[in-house]
Length: 466
Ligand code: ARG
Image 1 (cartoon, helix red, strand yellow):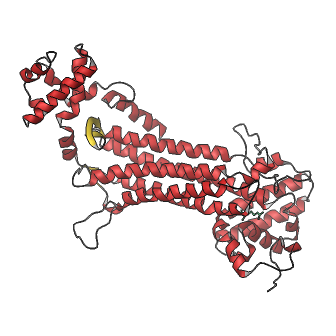
Image 2 (cartoon, helix red, strand yellow; image 1 turned 90 degrees about the vertical axis):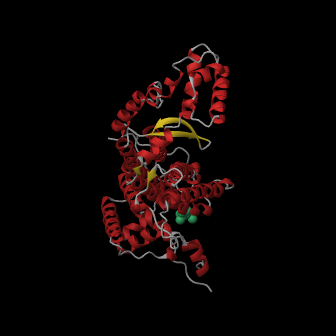
């Protein structure tokens, strides 16, 4: 069934693609979201063409006016996307050509290969900025939770066993460090995106006298001093998908961080811990068990992280065996990054909402952290300060712990005589170690959970997140 081709590339074809092929090869259903970036790219490109004299100023103005109209139509939902025209680029170019004859000159010295690379670099800069803002929102919610619960102490855990006491704020600040690295990572991705592909053509540039720096400047691909940044190898430019992978990796790691935070919250909200009450607004009930309040937002944060990792894996596999330069496989690069963006954006908002509604249970936290065994290490340090080598001190405290367990008493309920029998360096003041306040005050070094360093972290975060 020979049908004429609608496509811009139809010249050398006697028959158009089969309907099945059109359905198979279209990308406009997902790349239409690139429209604002595609139009910005076309405006800059046509401005450059006029600048070097390849089109007239009149033609440029007509193209610009046409593109503005199309952008307004798209924004108003009045633009009809045609899957027969494959992708966002050809849809917009054909719509433009219908209203502006000069648009037939728009694709001069340009290929869809450098065009789509440009659209995506603009998109990565945009997407990075959006996610950075949302992550900042989550960070602020964390800081607020730390402030509202500044006096609460909890056990810190290793191996999910109670280990040592820490201020809740110190634990929340650990999450904050993770999120702040994520925010920085998206800034790095945006900085890597900040190089203009236009002028690379299909793979080998163009014979026409273009001005790549002009286009780069017009699109904001400039360094801190406003100097244009253009990509340095035309073949790499159209084949490179590193940014897709970097972006998806940043999203995947963000997801992993959220998943670990969510796991802490799920544990803390269980009846076994009961350190925290999650906000009703981010939980759901059971259709069967009337008493249930399930930590669904946290569970979904944990679940979404799998999806974000999957998207990264899709991209790594997509690119791995491809010969240089562009291959149509690369069209499959967009759904995973768009999905990673959408899901990461949602996750950032949901975690911020969940954090904002946390209500900590002071009694339960206090009861958990009261366990004197959490200060067994401090007891070893007590011996170290009395000249006992740490390995011997560790052993002696181990024997003290064993004795308390044998006698079924808390560690601090043993008598000074009992412990002195275990090691002569234990003096009558040995039980002072179990003063929690004192124990934390001694953790005064940088990065430690004592009141002084934690106060410093409060000050640091307040400034950084203001
Ligand atoms: N829709 C295509 C993509 O996203 C645009 C580039 C097409 N280039 C080509 N040589 N067919 O990859």
